Image 1 (cartoon, helix red, strand yellow):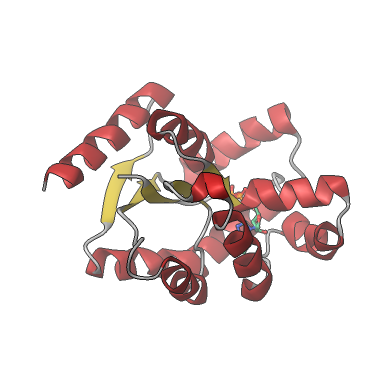
Image 2 (image 1 turned 60 degrees about the horizontal axis):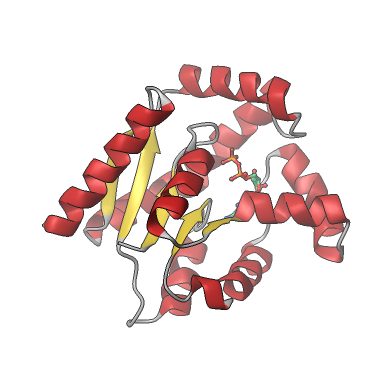
Length: 191
Ligand code: ADP
């Protein structure tokens, strides 16, 4: 189980859990949100292009996102596997990831972390105090949740049809959620 996609609404904790799972699995976590924020911080041409979209809670166009992920997954450290955090997020991205991986390196599992909207919003507003992300204001959070529902939720059905989807309750302590993810992956590996 070393090629894993972590999905879930904004603020559900998928970034934290993806990073922990990456350490436990010995493969890199690849977070498109982190990669974009790094470009914005470093003021690269890509960063300058996408900063307004990130600040508004809108998705970056698929071609831009796909190209960035393809480059990252081609790096030697991703050959043994990866934990994808925040990608794919649209149906065209899902198709592009399948194409990138080909038959030999298909996904092992897709972990969908879920939580209700009130829980999510309160977590994000707490995180806003700690991290100061530009897109963690109440209005932008609502927009991000709406975009997630419209663009990304349909991917869960697509992955469920492929038999890859593992639904995991994202409400609880960090350790509880980590344990649930490991249990779900162990069960899937044994099946
Ligand atoms: P969250 O899941 O909490 O919204 P992320 O760090 O995963 O946070 O993403 C932050 C922002 O980065 C998104 O709102 C979007 O603007 C951009 N982004 C990240 N991943 C993608 C993607 N796969 N496709 C398009 N835009 C993306």
